[in-house]
Amino acid sequence: MPVETCPNRVATNCSEGTSGELMIRPSASQVVDRLIRRLRVSDPPERFQRLACEAVRAMLAVEAVAWVPTARREAVVIAGQVDRLDVDSLRDLTPENSGGVWVSSGATKPADSPFRQAAVAHATGDGNATVGWIVAANPIDAVAFGPEVELLPTVAALIATQRGNARLYGDLKELVFGVIRSLTAAIDAKDPYTSGHSERVARIAVRIAEELGLSSSERGDLYLMGLLHDVGKIGIQDDVLKKPGKLTSEEYRQIKAHVGIGVHILTDLKKLHHLLPGVAHHHECYDGSGYPAGLVGDQIPLCARILAVADAFDAMSSNRPYRRRLAPDQIDEIFRKGAGTQWDRRVVEALFRCRADVERIRQKGLGESLRQAVGGTLGRG
Ligand SMILES: [Fe+2]
Image 1 (cartoon, rainbow, N blue to C red):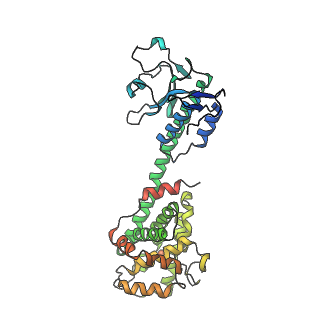
Image 2: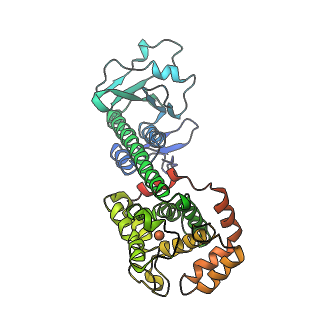
Image 3: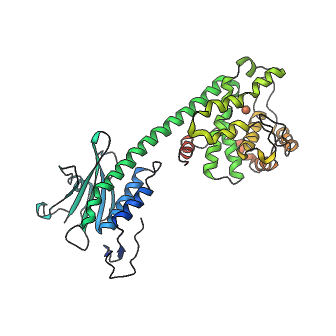
């Protein structure tokens, strides 16, 4: 929270900061309100802890406020400055009594203590175990703390809540990451001949999306859609999926079913619902001749129009059981002819603008972090 300069020297909620500036002191209810509104599980705990320490420091008008985690591998967060204050002196303030606020008595402190006055409140997590404590040190313009110090246990509880939820969020993110990786591996295992296709389509789609000016969160979603666009092929019979020759109409009908199967597989993953349009419609054609819905033009979600181009590019650039990969000139010619009928002309033009990059992406195999994309997806709503 930024420190605001007080315009009125006689206002009672103003105090002088350590560098002589006047600061507005937020009330306890303002601090709680601000912290609750910033209680985001996707934020790193240290960010919320710093925010909380800064808010409490402004409210109490003290030289420093620190969050001291019990686990020594976690960072101690300090807002403000106190002479000779270090992590050891903060850890020495662990009160025996873990309830309420413990206010130190200056008289009992050694002469070299950095604290004239310190107030401490514990935070507990699962099983009532102490996860850390918050320390407010040295009131600036008074010898004792004001009544607002009673808010410290509430702030400590908010820090513990955000820290615990952020950990659960991290676990959920890893779970979704693992599910997507497993599904992608299952698609690759189903048809080793097209191994890596999903990953390449995902990366190519992201590069085209960048060319079209899509935001980073839209690109993150597109990356996941690219990974999962053919997940329904898990449900297609091997002899049909890997058939080297021409497909019969019945076999083609079975292949086309992969989009519906893909949607069905992902339907129960509620956090991935916004990815379904890409999975469902990546075989639609701009002129309405595609499947499954025969959507026309802008009726087709943009993500699906981008995936269609990325998918076709990678398919034409790869060897298949029934043909060799096409030369770059042939691929460009097919895209030129199909722009406006099979594919969205604007997407094809975007592909041409970043053609060299797309070729490099296809060959190299390093792309956007899946963890980052999963984080963006879970951070929605
Ligand atoms: Fe497909």
